[in-house]
Length: 495
Ligand code: NAP
Ligand code: MG
View (cartoon, helix red, strand yellow):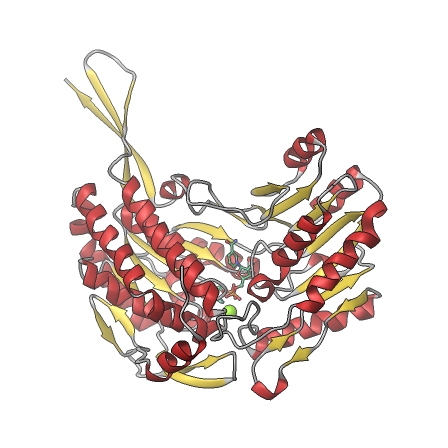
């Protein structure tokens, strides 16, 4: 895929018309209070668009619209819903450059990644879910001669998706695809840092033929719009991606309101194990570096804990550190950039605090550790590596969500597995080894929803994604994702 030049992106960014209003019942609307907040470009720290700040009143209006639209959408033949959603996916691709630009300006993700990754993968997720929907059958349960028992799946009704800022389009699409395909209506609340692509997406849905009210976008804050969705008595399901802390709030909101279904895709502190018998240390080092520095480490499944067997420790760490030092951040609108800024000043401050904590805990800083490109006023941080980390340190236990790798040394396989599993999280894990028995044993022993062997961060729509332990429950992607948005009904027909 050819990516446009630097000049093209800078010019296009200048002329871009950006919508900041909410999208409810098929049209753009200001928030009821008229209040807005300012979206900031993390590459230069400048505000560039005012966005509707929705609260409980806007949520109420959107839930009403979604409820009214539900019967029509849910009763449409799956093949017809499929056609509309396939058109939606096509429109996302047709507007790829604009969506990529919105994403890059909003969260600082390199334009190369948004054009070739985030946007096409979001389109693919919606198309994949749409294609599945007229190929899934119900069941006829075995029973008596004079009774027919059907087991069918029905949509839940009004689904609210609350999503984070690190992959705004992809995380939204992982919810939109299966929820809409199965016949639900939706309200999407993007993170306050990243509302712009979601708002644009809503208008594309209408253009594709999605009926009014079926897909609504409510920008706003977590403690206002997010909480109002969590507590709303007419929302049937919350599908959440974000931190473990906020995920737990949604369980409380559900308990305090209507026992709505909640599925949670939460944080991680994924172990990336390299065993001494690994013959491809260069390949493993590249994967370890990409696994923590991609998207500036703001990745739920980032391989933030490198667990390396002592025999190869020096040789391996040297390789990783040299990759880290060679990787310098740059303007995300430049197609040559591989590492952009962190999303905002709060996140930068949080990550810098952890770098401080790590040093105080006695870990050795062997790469990065400081802000960079200061003249830009952007939130750039050099790729950072800590050596001499022990698993009891806060930097080894808490999710930093930045380009900070913690290296831990272990004596053998058993210690590697036990250190890997010694965390409250269980989203993903990886192991590098040439020994097939160790590969299988590790894959079974690691307590995580996704395990990679001799690779990292592989995924497709055909395989589910989600966590064990406090990384959440419920799965995104694959046919299993459709289960989250449907309920089983048993129908007994006597004859
Ligand atoms: P976050 O702070 O938990 O926020 C996620 C969403 O929840 C945002 O839309 C946020 O709105 C909203 N929210 C915040 N406080 C709320 C409250 N009291 N009530 C209701 N809603 C509330 O997470 P984030 O900082 O955006 O994203 C980073 C986190 O997401 C990391 O922990 C990362 O691991 C996790 N993540 C997980 C996955 C996965 O698939 N497992 C994928 C990506 C990211 P505001 O923006 O207004 O705060
Ligand atoms: Mg937040």
